[in-house]
Image (cartoon, rainbow over all chains, first blue to last red; front, top):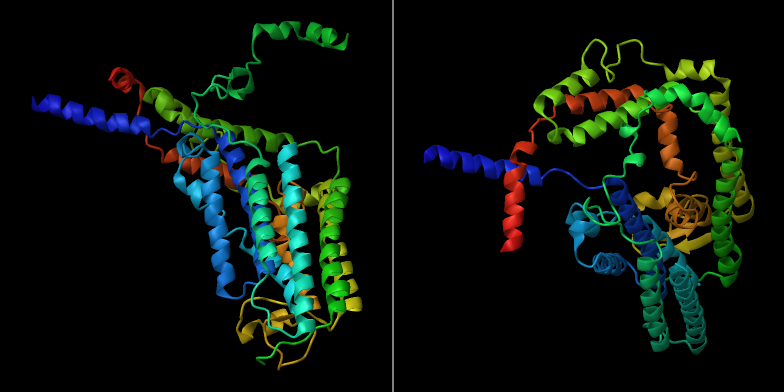
Length: 120
Length: 106
Length: 247
């Protein structure tokens, strides 16, 4: 009985190990990551322009950036039809990756639009 | 792709128009010597519209997600010709290789 | 310093906007020039291609290790990573020295020089141009407060210690553009493009990448892999899946 139990336990373990086998195509994953990168970059530029026109200064602008990025995450999830695991290997890829990458573009375009509209 | 791109361009144009009207509004305020408290209503509406259009463009233009699962239709793992590991050069066909070259030349 | 500076709108129309537009256009121009100058008939080195293929094969073995029996896996691993003549094993001292390789191959040196020229010349020219036409303007204002430390970075070219730090001189606006426009370039030029300055600087300091390092890393990761043959348990797994389907 005990032996049987043991074998079932080990079975479970190994079946889990089998489930963990990374069987996904890396090229498609890279393609997906690139799509996300483009979306985020474009939206950080657009977000910067909007924040500049609205005249945000200081902390409000950064909050606006994070808001835009959060909306982008939701939009990307909607694009993946909320079945993230058939397109990415983890949730972090779609939610967190590239969150800070667009910050420099955002700040530049924020400054640009703000200067054009407000300081002159 | 085409439609999304056009939508993105329209969004950017709307944004630049919003920027322009804000500049006008500010110069008006300067003449009337009032303080700037916030952009006028129509600019905010334009910005929101531009944001929505650009968001839509940003989500559609870069292309679709491809499934990474090996068991979907468009993603067969058994694409043998594309797999270098299954290419065999050391087979009896190499005897005919010169003929192959001739065929290719013709 | 609480009161705002009143800037002439002519500065906006004739400094801020032209400077930014010119930066974008020069970035695009540089991309195409470096694309043109890149030598088209580049025959890849046989040895490098071979090593790349070996790495791909080792990676495939690593990712599919659990689908083959332990004996086969061990045999393959020895084939790749034994200490005498394994494919991934690079004997010490035999690693190709990139420096020496460069001197033996004038083409490579030429390439490197072209790359550097296409990077440095436009940069110097633009900087000289900006200095000549636009020096000494307060051109922009950063919409968030910064500490005094940033003064030398943001107000390069104007010597006014009473102006608020968030005001940016035109020369510093040039630098901000130089670093901040990468996102835009990657959008309009597609892909990781040639304007990626910081990355290239990294490469220059490392002086080319070392393929033997790749081989060594792959060998290490192949050595530490835990082999666990998956197939004997596959019937149970299939049974489980089918049961789940029935249920």
